[in-house]
Image 1 (tube, chains in turn blue, purple):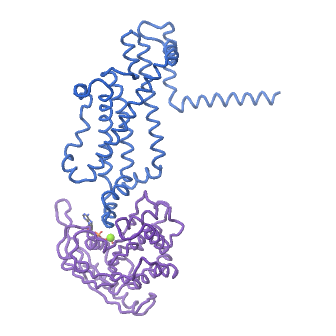
Image 2 (tube, chains in turn orange, blue; image 1 turned 60 degrees about the horizontal axis):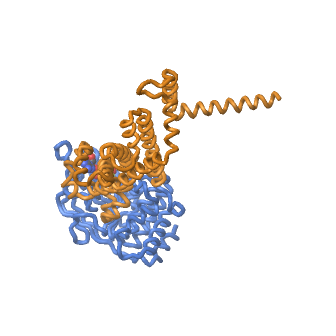
Image 3 (cartoon, chains in turn yellow, green; image 1 turned 120 degrees about the vertical axis):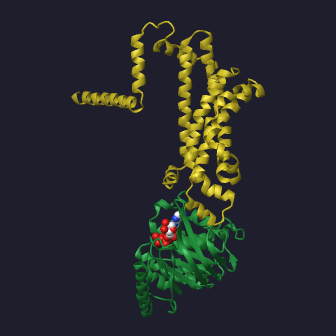
Length: 274
Length: 270
Ligand SMILES: Nc1ncnc2c1ncn2[C@@H]1O[C@H](COP(=O)(O)OP(=O)(O)OP(=O)(O)O)[C@@H](O)[C@H]1O
Ligand SMILES: [Mg+2]
C-alpha cells in the first residue's frame, strides 16, 4: 500500500510538473495569468468589457455554427492563394533583379524604396478597377506578399560570394544552370526569410481587405458583426481567432520550409557568407 | 595507385589530349585600394610551351594567385597580352581549368554534384558518359565512397582532392593549379604529386602550378619560375632537365633546390 501510494504521488507530481513546464515552456504563463486576473477582477461582466468566461461562452457557441467555419475557410483560402501568387511573383522578380544586369540597371535604384510602398493606399484604386469581390482582395494580398519576398530574394542574390561566382564562370554555367546550382541555393536562407515576412504581410492584407471590401465570407465578418450588434465579445473573439490563425499559418510555413530545405543547407548557405 | 590511372586510360571519353601553349607578354596588374593604385604584378613575360609543366614559387602576397586568375580569364583588367593557343584571353574558356587555392566546392552540393557541375555546359557527352567520367575522377582522387558527402563532411584535404577532380574532369588543355596540395596531408600529398605527374605524362596537358613547396615545384616542373614580391615580377627561371618519372630524390633536384632557396632569399632581402 505504501509502495502504491508513493507511486501515485510520484505520478501526480510528474503530471503537475509536466503541465507546469508546458505552461512556462510555451510562453503561455503570462496570457493565462492575465486571463485569470481579468476573470477575478470582473466576475459579473461589465458594460462593454466581457470577461473571459463570457468570451468562452461566445466562442463555444460560435464553433457550433457552420458560418464560422466557412468564414475561417474563406480567409485561409484567400491568404493561401494570395500568398502563393505573391510569393511566386516575388521570388521570380527577386531572382531576375539579382541575376539579370539589365533588370538591375532598370529597377536597382528604386528597389529599396519598394519597402515603403503604401500597399493599403492602393485599395481604392483596386476597388475601382476590380470591384469589391475576390479578385481585388487576392491582388492586394499578393502585392503585400511580393514586396518583402522580392526584396529578400534580391538581397540573397546580391550577397552571393564572388568566389562561387568565379567557379560558375570557370565552368561557363549558363543562366539557368547557374540559377539552379548557385543563385537559388545560396539565396535560399534569404528567400525563406522573405517568405516568412511575406506571409505575415499577406495575413495582414487579408484581414484589411476583408474589412475594407466587406463582401463575401471571411474572419473579419466576426469583427464587423460585433461592431454592428454592439457585441465586443464577438470582436474580441474575432481578433483572437485571427491572431491564432496567423500563428498557425506561420508554423505551417516553417514546417514546410524545414521539410523542403534540409536544415544543413540553410545553415551552410548562411555560414558560407561570413 | 596505378589502377585509377589505368582506369582513366581505358576510359573512352578521355582521348590523349595535347595541351595548348600559354603566352604572357608584359603582363602588369594593379588593384586600386582606397583610391590608390597598388601594383601587384609588373611586366611578367613567360612563354609556356604546349604540354609543358611550369611551377611558380614566390613569397606570399607576390601575386601568384592573381597571375593564374589573369590566365584563367577571371581578371578582366590588366595590361599586356595573354594568349592560350594563340587566342587572346578575355573570359574563362573550356580550354583552361583552374584549381583554386581554397577548394570552393559549393556547400549545398555533394561531391558528385560538385564534380558533375563542371560538365554541365558540355553538350557533346551523353548523360551516361558524364556520369562515368565523374565516377572515374572520383576514383582518381581516391574519394570513392564519399560521392554523396557534402563538403562540410570532408576533411580539408579531401575537399581539395574533390576540387582537383572537378578541374580535371573537363580535360582542359591548360590546367592552372593554385597550391592544389596545400591543405593535403603529407602522405596523400606524395600520392597526389605522383598522380599529377602521371596524369601530366599521359594527357600532355599544359600545367602551371603555384606552390609553396620547393620540392614539389622541382618534382613536377619542366621549369620553375621564381617570383619576387612588391610588385610581383620574375626573379629568375630555372630549367629542370631531370628525366621523368622523377622520385624527388635525384641529386640534380637537390642541387636545384639549393639554388631556388638562395634566389628566394635574395628576393626577400630587397
Ligand atoms: N581583389 C583584390 N582587390 C585588391 N587587392 C587584391 C585583390 N586580390 C589580390 N589583391 C592583392 O594583390 C596582392 C597579391 O595577391 P595574391 O592573392 O595574388 O597573392 P599570392 O601570391 O597568391 O599570395 P599567397 O601565396 O598568400 O596565396 C596582395 O597584396 C593582395 O592584397
Ligand atoms: Mg595565392
